[in-house]
Length: 367
Image 1: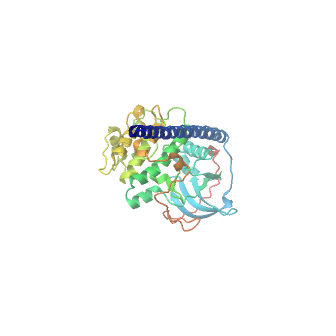
Image 2: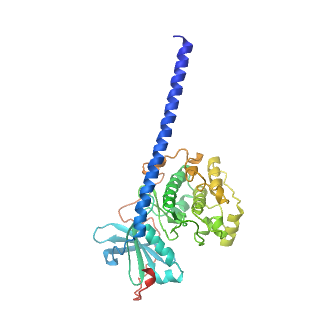
Image 3: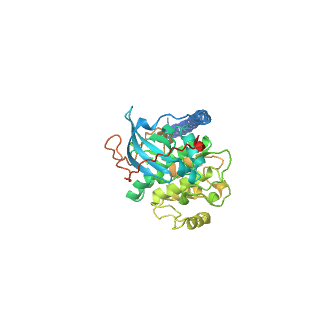
């Protein structure tokens, strides 16, 4: 056989091999996509059953030993507690009914409990127990000991793009899951992203989450993270969450959000202007992704186009991301918090403890 024929044969075999590899990769992607669709369909059915028939009180305060406060909010606090029977540690969210009433947050509070008790996802905190008494509402969540992303981000200044991408991928998968269930999150911010013992994220605080079929109009969320359509009172949908993802990715990569000012009204003016400045260290791929997420025109925003979340997942900035490995928690985290022992709350701020009130006034609004 001539040398030219040998070269042609090698070339043909090489092309066949490349074609086979490409075909196998495409087939794997199709199979992976089908598995995702099957998972989401099953998850939606399971969610709907629990959402339609929410569980009643599943514990009582006497079941827990209260250790210390690990967080405070407008309506109450979060305490580290230990279950007396099983010895496990939890984060108990304690909401004062009167404050919830005063701030007209009854609907949001009920949505949070109803949604949390019905969902299950690797990057969302689990609601293990919930109950109430005459004064307080209690939600007992899994304790995530690594602290929140906000504190960690402020400590290190900013994340590398690789570090940011690791966290962003988890949020993309979480929003995909929630949106498939018909839930808009509306509360994305570093303060509510907890870091677990393996360095993965857990989305917490579903106080603004809501199940919707079309649009909603409530102005809620952190000013820096509000989408322009929320500010302009046009009514909004799940696209607002993809805008918030863009803000989060920017803040993780820069160390500060793209729109900030002393007063909320000034922040809103900057958001609706649509003008974004990128730090010089942002890669071209990152800037391209952010331009498509922080797109004022909802009809052109990534996550809401014909391909849905695929436009984000196949973007060049995510080209090295193995989405299945992220979901399976098989990727090594760039940061793993130091945890001394179960129940270690050293990654959380310390707060002055307050005695719980004893008000014997039942409120039917929280039934």
